[in-house]
Structure formats: C-alpha cells, structure tokens
Amino acid sequence: MRRRVSRAVARRRVFPFLAGVITLLALGSGVLAWLLDREDFHTFGDGVWWAVVTLGTVGYGDIVPHTAWGRVLGGVVIVCGVTFISLLTAIVTSLFVAGDQAEAMVRAAGPTAQVESETDAALQRIEQKLAAIEARLDRT
Picture 1 (cartoon, rainbow, N blue to C red):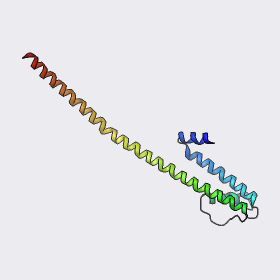
Picture 2 (tube, one colour):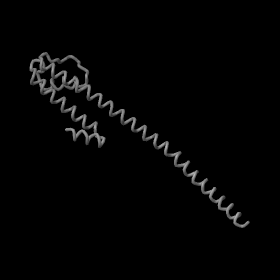
Picture 3 (tube, helix red, strand yellow):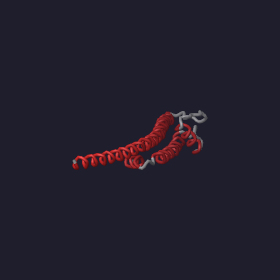
Picture 4 (cartoon, rainbow, N blue to C red):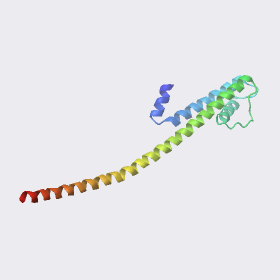
C-alpha cells in the first residue's frame, strides 16, 4: 500500500487515488454497517448512504447506528472522512502554490535573460573600445 501511495504522489495522481480509496471505504463501510446493525440499516443502500454522508462529515441523522459496534464503525468512518477532506484540501492548495511558483519563475527568468543579453552586448562594446585604445597605444 505504501508503494502505491508513493507512486501516486510521484506521478501527481493523488486525487484519483484518494477518490478510489474513499469510494472503496464508503462501499466497505456501508456493507459493514449493514451487516453489523440490520435494525438501523435495513438495506445495503442505507448502509452506503450512511457511509457517504458520514465520510462527508455531514451527518443528516436520518440513519444512525445504535449498537456499540455501529458507533465504533461510525467513529472510524468520521475520522477517515475528515482525513480525506484534509488531504484533498492540501493537494488542491499545493497545486495552486506550485502553479503560482512556476508562473513567478517564468516572470523572473524573462528579465534576467534580457539583462544578461544587454550585459554581454555592453561587454563586447567595451572590449572593442579597449582593443581600439591598445591599437592607438601600440602606434605611438
């Protein structure tokens, strides 16, 4: 699992990876909730609905686990949802910052190249003038 996460980060494919993980987590949590607490989660769909709402930290309250294991599962699902939202926010922010940094580098590189070109031209003019002065000195 650690290798997959590292590859996803290195390839800048973190969002699809996280979306896949959260989808699997929602489906798995829904099935588990449905299996643990059939009184509160009458269908598989109820379990998945509850998992999606809980992962999103919305918690409508229309379906709520009443058993101890259902509440433990709910706590785990809430922590996973908060973690997912935090990672997603960090990724989006990182992409914005990286874009701004790249743009700033392009802006900074433009004038630097122009200044270098002007400096090279000025040095060539100075060398030509020095060569002319040396030539005059040699004649005298």
